[in-house]
Length: 68
Image 1 (cartoon, one colour):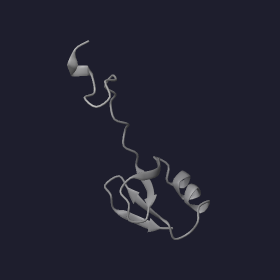
Image 2 (cartoon, rainbow, N blue to C red; image 1 turned 180 degrees about the vertical axis):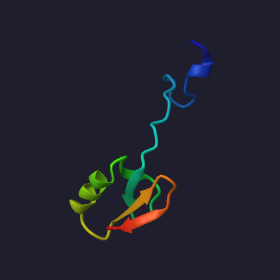
Image 3 (cartoon, one colour; image 1 turned 45 degrees about the vertical axis):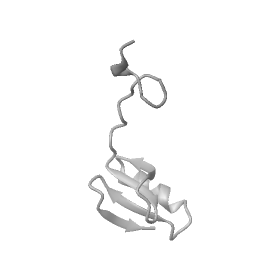
Image 4 (spheres, rainbow, N blue to C red; image 1 turned 90 degrees about the horizontal axis):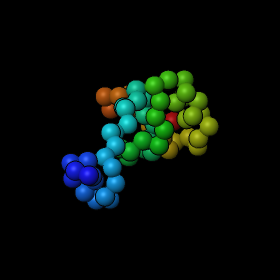
């Protein structure tokens, strides 16, 4: 196998990154998403089931849309 298709850190096959979603919920102050979706209602329902005051909703550009 060519080294061009092997990850340097794990030795496994290269996989394309997941497609970016339109909306992203994350813990307040964090960059990594805990829930992503292209459907705004799906993300809002997910946030409604969580404890308030801990999450932020961002769009695909990173703009803050709401805090929940």
